[in-house]
Image (tube, rainbow, N blue to C red; front, side, top):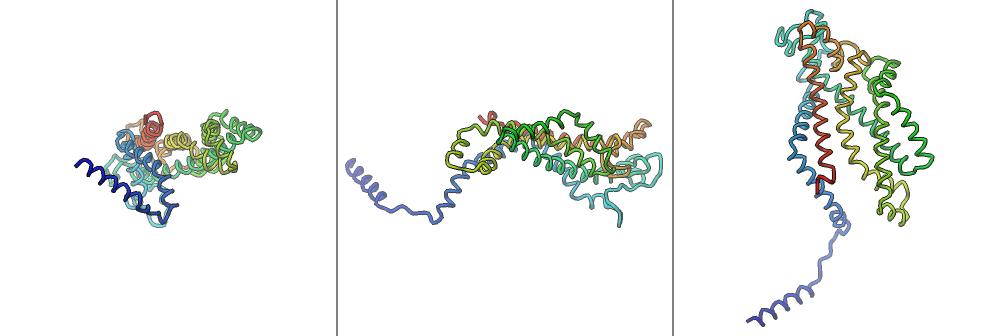
Amino acid sequence: MANKKKVHKKKAVKTEQAMPKKRSKNPEVEELIAELRPRIKEYSDSLSMVVHNPTVMLGILIISIIIIIALFAPFIAPPADNSDPYLIPMDFIVPPRAPGVDGFILGSGDLGLDVFYGIVWGARTTIYTSLLVVGIATIIGLLLGSVAGFYGGRIDNILMRITDVFLSLPALILAMAVSSVLSKDINSIIFSLIIVWWPSYARLVRGQVLAIKENTYIEAARAIGAKNSRILFRHVVPNSLTPLIVAVTMDIGSVALTAAGLSYIGFGVETGYAEWGRMVSDGQKWFVAGYWWTVAFPGLAILLFTMGFSLVGDGLRDILDPRMKR
């Protein structure tokens, strides 16, 4: 019986060897899938860590609520017809009315400003300002930092000395100086913060590029004749993004806080504009008289927005750190 089983197995093996292997109709697709499989697994593991991280999930929840409020602002707080929706309605009645009085959900502020309306539309202002500043500053810092770190020499010296000039000046003082010579609107705040924010990204990216360009796979790419531009943007820059992503996520809240600070001290927008920092500034004189809602609700909105992105950034730092996955 044992001999018969062995003969059976040998015949089966011969049959499998004799059968021609099926050739794939799309070898390029299979090669692409095989190349992407480890990346997909890595992304899946990272997503799983995000879902099981309570800090990140709390931050995502806070950010999602603020984004939903901003998206549905025209329905939550409908603006008047043929008027700028970012101008808060006011009836010039003083002192401020408490929350729930005369139809004011969160009360009224200075000159009868609707606090609820200002917070809802201020969410749009804050998101727009933060994302635009961080987005443009990231692009500038990524380009200058990667070019400086990869090519080195005179290019590196020139770009980094320019960066050092901006870093040597106090960020808030520089932003105030730029805003003071521009018109008082939200665009002046955005422009001044872009000037302040890009140098730190350039420094961060340059440090990453200096370390990555010495790796073996970069030398291999050079050995097979790959152009410098291809090596830089195909191999070096993508592998330098992890710390930049974490920094950008955490800085979105910091930008919102700095923009609110500039509005609070009088730079940027005028009274009546739906911007949380300006609302706190307008309500402070009433706050000391006991009208706490004029400052508390806009201040709470700033706190939640900043805390949400800080929680997400702090969690991403732990998740994207390779040492945490071991």
